Amino acid sequence: MIVYGDYECPFCAALEARVHELRLRVCFRHFPVRASHPRAHPAACAAEAAGRQGAFWAMHDALFSDQGRLEDPHLWARAEHLGLDVARFDADRRSEAVAERVKADFRAGVRAGVVTTPTIFIAGTAVAGRATMEAVSRIEPGSGPARNH
Image 1 (cartoon, rainbow, N blue to C red):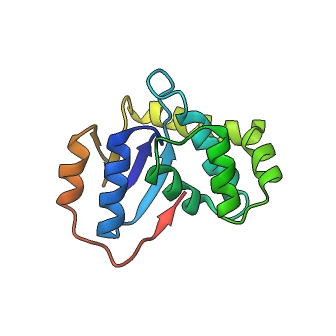
Image 2: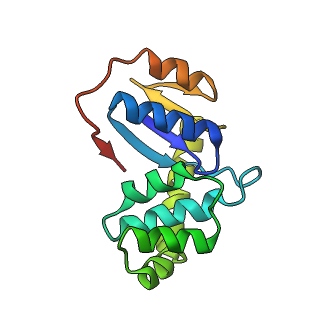
């Protein structure tokens, strides 16, 4: 399953919890909706910056677990808690390379027809918004959390 998500979207957080519970194979793509979620893009960049130190999924989980705290000091605290080099993390998250990675996911989502979050693709079929929870509930549980980014 491919998930286009936004770290500030409450429906994305609910979907993430359900997907994790079912142990489904997931490929996550960034789709920050800046108009309604101003901290989603910086949070996506934080996940990518953590990924440069091998901690994408740990940061991903931390961002979804506490969506009310996505400001810079909270991102730095998460990076420190994860044992990351915080100075490197901050430089990476502000870098053009990380911003381009997030933009590339967003552009790919637009090309695929994504207009809202969450949007999931299951066997090539798109399901968007609140309907994602019902669609995910119909999937057989997986054998383990195989995550791709």
